[in-house]
Amino acid sequence: MRPTRYAGNGRELPLEAGPVVAEEAADVRAVQDAGKRRHMMRLLPPLIALATSTAAIAAPPVDPAMLGRISEEGFNHSQVVDIAAYLADQIGGRMTNSPAMRKAEAWTQGRFTDWGLKNVHTEGYEFGRGWWIESVSVRMTAPRPIVLRAIPVAWSQPTAGTITAPIVVAPIRKVEDLAAWRGKLAGKIVLTTYPEAPKEPTRMPFRRYSAEDIAKLDEYQQPSFDPEDVKKELKEFQLAPAIDAFLKAEGALAAVRMSYKENGLVTGEGYSFRTGLTMPGIEVAAEDYRRLARLAKVGPVTVEINSNVHFDDRDSKAYNVIAEIPGSDPKAGYVMAGAHLDSWVAADGAADNGAGSAMIMEAARILAATGVKPKRTIRFALWSGEEQGLFGSAAYIDQHLARRPVPSDPAAAALGPYFVDTWPVTPLPGYRDLAAYFNIDNGSGKLRGIYAEGNYGVVPIFQEWLAPFASMGAGAVVAKPTTGTDHEMMERIGLPAFQFIQDPLDYSPNVHHSSLDSFDHLRPEDMRQGSVILATMLLDAANAEKPLPGKPVPTQPQPSDPFKYDDPAER
Image (cartoon, rainbow, N blue to C red; front, side):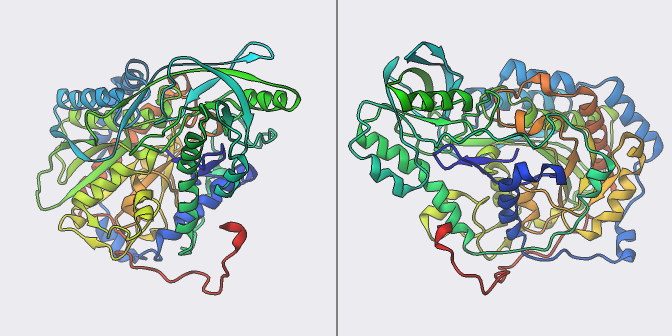
């Protein structure tokens, strides 16, 4: 969930805001700014459905007898915890195209098949290299021996066994900083992040939403568009490979960056999945990194690194896993639920997004076990490549729903469809077959409602469908959009696609993408609740008289501020 990129200098570049409430604002200002940039691509005001047309679309909620069967199966015979535990403990972190991800793709297909789902298959798309970590050891050896908390950067090179060398602290924030270090880095382990001082925490480490928190989410945000945003994304995207190439040319032995998280946590995020880096890359916990930098101010420091990582180039394609419960009316289209199966590998990918994947699978199992016969087909998707830029859901759109031109600039094309919108949007014949899409990707927290994504037409429908779950705290329908996960790719082309509101728990800032993302941070009771609600909402949408209202097919917008001047400081 919530893909972030490194500029190559240890700064986090978050790409979406998620459900942020007022007291968290100071701590996540950069996240909100980046989320606003993604929201700039939303382009058109929502299609405002009249109450009369909404009433025609809505079907009564699932009848009480069926709701009772779903609840019985989902609460008293649940397998969601077993599914989540297998993904986290048996398979572990699932980097796209890694051996662990291949195992997860096979295992999830087997589960769907065992439960009686139909048309179980994978759909491939071109992605890049596989990569995995066998082991890593990082120590300071002088002025005294200390084991450092560290992880290899994704898609970085291994070391040639154990390397030991003096460090050089060479903070690099932009390409122009490289020249100052020419001729000074040969034979050195280079620390490329500026060792910023720790910041005081501004949010509780574990929390659930209050009614007041959720009310703050019910705020419509006008679309905003700045065509210069792509240039900023390109600059950030190109810094990491520029640092890597420079260090290689200078004869450095390894690149070390500081984790953007505190409390000894590391992430290992990296984005060179098409080519791989040319240098060994290591991320060191913030506290350990600062110690190295302090010591380097007063004398020589030596570090030892053994990074035993592997590339896997047997298949450059990544795969989405698809399964279905067939509908009785082949002309009625389908409804869909999805979560991303891939993860980072600092830990086990339990909350991000083994939890969401487990709830998608459990909803499929519940509906299959109750023997439902929906009007529309109910399709389930486990996406890949989400952490690198929502590549799996983007590929599904390209294969089934709509096309956008490839950017004429090769550098912009390399960013991927999440970062660069092009025009026109050309719907494919299957565009209107998708009647509704529901996504789960905010950890294992209890479902509290759903983001309407500024789509007024769905508000009364969702309020009716969620009404049976008010006693579970899941009745909110809010106007505010949430970005940075797979529903967004569909929502951005005008389709009715939605993400659920979930209690934050300890997902951010601690668990998300970090070395804490293990099974112990999941909440089984919340996951059972989420699975039952998702199964019911899917059946509601599958049996509704008409598809959920979407938005117009977007067209290229005008700049929101036509009088804005280009600020050189932002280049």
